[in-house]
Image (cartoon, rainbow, N blue to C red; front, side, top):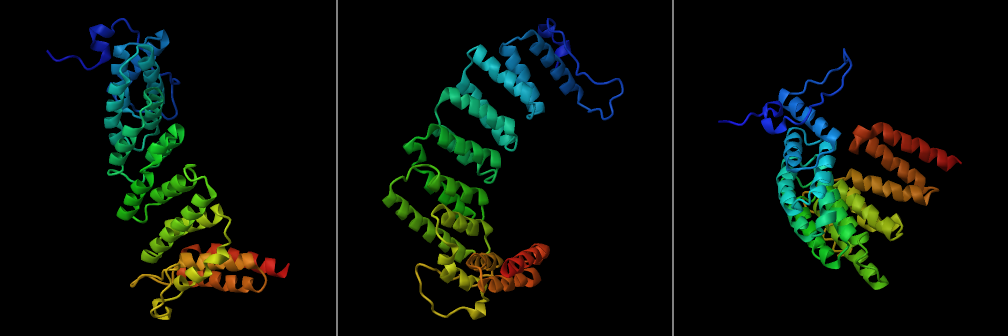
Length: 330
């Protein structure tokens, strides 16, 4: 005989008084829950009222979570129940493997996983699990946030050990993955792994080479240009130091200097779409900081962006021009 699906029809739940969700007599915008969801949440409210923590509560909360993975009260009560009855958290983590893949963009899934990890304290397998989820979605904010929390919270040198290779693989697969670029910055500059002055200089040089080569391959990649800005700000290096590198990217392919060899400043790759609006903006920022007559150069570059290379932001570039001229007259 098939077991009744409604909790109201299950003898083992007859000791629980279901509590319906309170709504006004004539709600302005009633929510049309399914009968299955109403039945489950009615019994959940009944359970919460009496404070029961048991195996059947885990079954009930799992049912509700599968119907609505964003039900944060069900998640919280589930966690409290797991702890109260000394449940197998390893088994719970395996269930979360399934739910995380199914509901990658649901914050509550990752928050629950974080709570479990605070108890289990075995972060290494988690990095492997996250790597698998990135094959489904390599740019999911919640997943990246969880990975960075793991690294920062446990802060183990061995845990950090392969992180740079990991993120390089992701960038090799998709050089425009802004989440991976952000994580690279987090790994390189915020991990605390490289603390000595000698290490710092070596790392800065390595990262500068890496980002310049990336820009060379795909000039119109905002993530790489932002990373370059991040390196310069992290090291307190003036943007003006980049003029030699940036200028070729502000020119058309026909204007490029033939057979130019400069290992420190790799030129745009053949077939690149130039001029690059991101490079023009970068060069204009350099001229703006220099001030004086250089501000006129900046305004000319902003005009070219507004009229030709970045027309979508024309109003913004017109604003930059007005502000630049105002500063020049001050």
